[in-house]
Amino acid sequence: MTAQEVFDTTVQHILKQGRALDKEMHDNDDDTGAHEVNYCVYRSKEGKKCAAGLWITDAEYNVGMETRNLESVLHDDTIQADNILYKYTKLVCQLQRWHDLDANWTDDFHMSDAGEKYLDSVAYYNGLKYKREVNNG
Image (cartoon, rainbow, N blue to C red; front, side):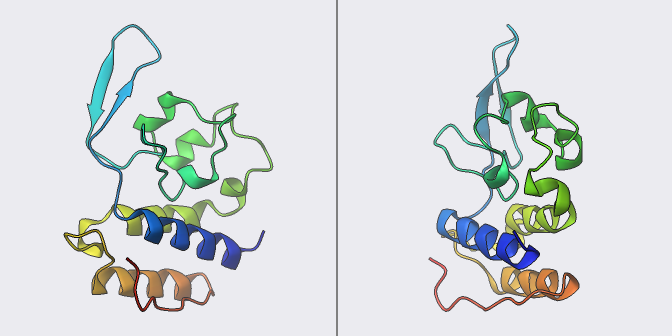
């Protein structure tokens, strides 16, 4: 898979889904019970996935990832060596940041002008092409 394919697939996934997956409840793997997180999660209970979570398979995923950044998650034994996240870590982290920043989204979960500019800069920085969306809702 090319960087352009990762970019296009991730952007389309996030545009269909909307802004960051924040304030999700997750059960801990231990006996301490559920905890609320106030940041983007790799996966929500409803099955939504963030920019990086999109590329983590069901077999690779575990709830313990939810409190850690992508670089830390990639050190897990559960992430397969051929996962595209290893090759495109920087690009996916940039797309995660685009997804997570409130300024990139309107109150009705559509991408803002700032979000469009952010994607333009991610594409430019990575030598990719970004076609602005006419309607991302």
